Image (tube, rainbow, N blue to C red):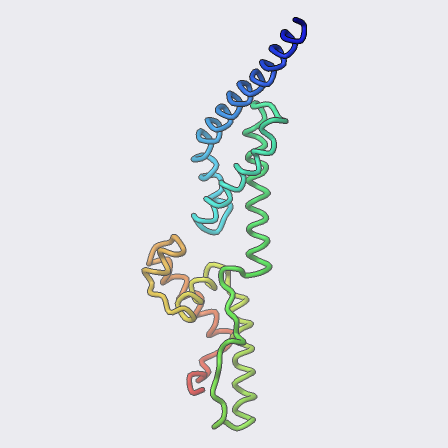
Length: 193
């Protein structure tokens, strides 16, 4: 008889924590839903684009899931925003160190140099090096817009959509990029190659 009572009580023990965990999970999901808009707004000011802000918000919420069982609900919001700041910093650091969105492999560009003299080729190589250095020194947003236009051939409207900015801002970034490039490189006739 004790065995029946023990097995019956053992059968009900796992159910009680499952109900609590389900309630906690529902509370956590409700918390995440209630925080998403505010977190996204917070991250818009700390990331390069709307897409980066959305990615950072989702990553922050996913990372917070590790703490939903170990931390009380009263600290979830503070913890979420601390995680979000770290995620935004990580995104910025990766973008700065790798130029991940704007990377263009210059090795892939083929130039027919068979009809050019060694002097012309050396001059061209110097111009390419100066231009590459000048492009890498552009502000990140100007650099991205310039590369999307010059390397990928996108229209102003496509660039605006991709960067989540206005067409007017695309034009401003292009004008800034071209002015800086002219200052640093000059008006060299590279199109002859």
